[in-house]
Length: 315
Image (tube, rainbow, N blue to C red):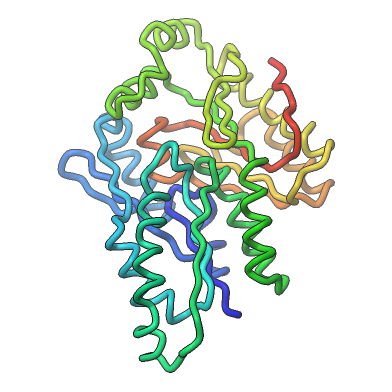
């Protein structure tokens, strides 16, 4: 059985990895004023757009994910021909309509695929499953890497599906933003009142950075730490503890809203990298998606892994 994998471009994994493993990307288009860029995970294009537009006017950006019709056309024109079963793994539906768009498109795809496959000389059935990763950005990468690993190991679709749906429940994404004023402005532009003016003002005045945690589609602050670099160092140290306690998959994903060399110079990074190597954990590093940066601001850091049980983040 030929198994295909699809992610949206908010999934923070290196483009080289996605291309090497033939993972299809659903691009999200970003518009800031007259400037428009479809995000295909091209890190250089993302950084150029970041420096030119996001810093000044990113909070006003409009993000446009693939529509139901566009997803349907992608599958009918290509994926139902190239594969027998496709897993489409999306950003959490609590923060984006992509899951709902893919789910709606799936009904039409399953009704219409036979003609396309027959024309390609393949009369066998086609199936697909839309998976809500229940997380964001680098944390979406945990499911995608595991799907690649299982597919390449020859596992069948039922086992992959069960694994991905269980993994979504235990994937943890942690983010530290640099600019709370930006985060508040962006949240307000989308009608999200979760970052209040008072907390943003106090946080910026005192240089207090929240550590935001996402699991099962729910996001909230688990710590508030003075200074971006001290907050990052504590998050890296916390991740090392979780590695030593045991992860569900041998994977840690990092994404950063800027040049990766800046992230690698942050305190605690060398220790995290060494802990991953010593415990046979694969460390993925990528520039944050353009969608991610316009939503949380430049310079934000995301760390993600999958682990059972809840561990308290210690300030």
